Image (cartoon, rainbow, N blue to C red; front, side, top):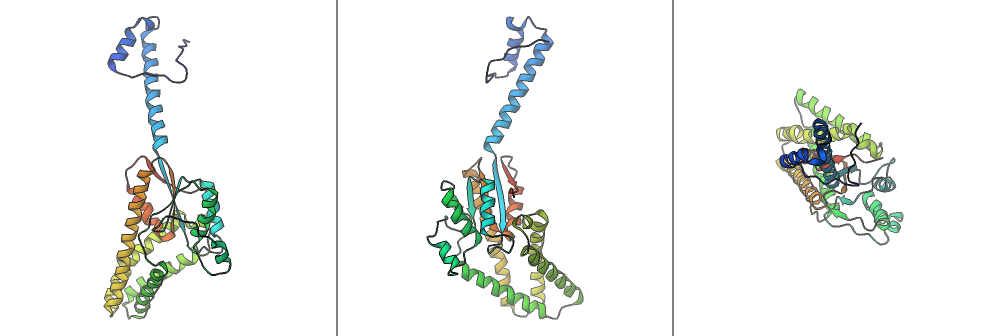
Length: 299
């Protein structure tokens, strides 16, 4: 067996047809059988190519972790759970579902304890996390909603008005079956996520259910509403709700794409309501970008 000593640490070699030819004809290599020299040079070139390629890939890869939450938490997970997940996954950047940069709120724990304020579990988890990890940026990616409490109140009122009228409307037998099937799936879904862990509600089957429910509302329930609800204003408000939902999701994706370019090669954790996750995940996975990957969080 022939051993050929290589330069220590790093071999610098630019492979061209001319350089290979010169190497083969040089006096340094005439002592070795030519076929073994060719094998050695070919092996070195291949090793250098893949070492460079994989090295660049590892440096530039941006990892995105989407954590779908219930903003109020449930009996099986709360802000402490979310804090531990953040600690374990060690993000370089955190995006939260707001339109302004995160700021710690003085007296938040006291106000929460005294039930003077009911912040979401994301706010409480980030309050503690930002105190321990001051250098981690926590940035917004949601559209501007002037008053979230008013928005949520409007959301409930529009949904109740639409579903109350559709529920009591006299429908054909096939349409009644379609509606009953949707209601059953809807109620089972929310009952399940209200009594499941954070990791469980982020599994693929639950994300699929979330996607199916929203697509059904837009493509099946909305047409049923137009068909059976006499008050067109109720249907229009419900339709407007969907238009805003889709525009909001699209804005979120645009923001995430912007941050992924700005912080290329970093690990980005996205904290968002569970029902946004399917859209964000689908759109990000559509991108043909080898340097970007959507991965699951470590439990």
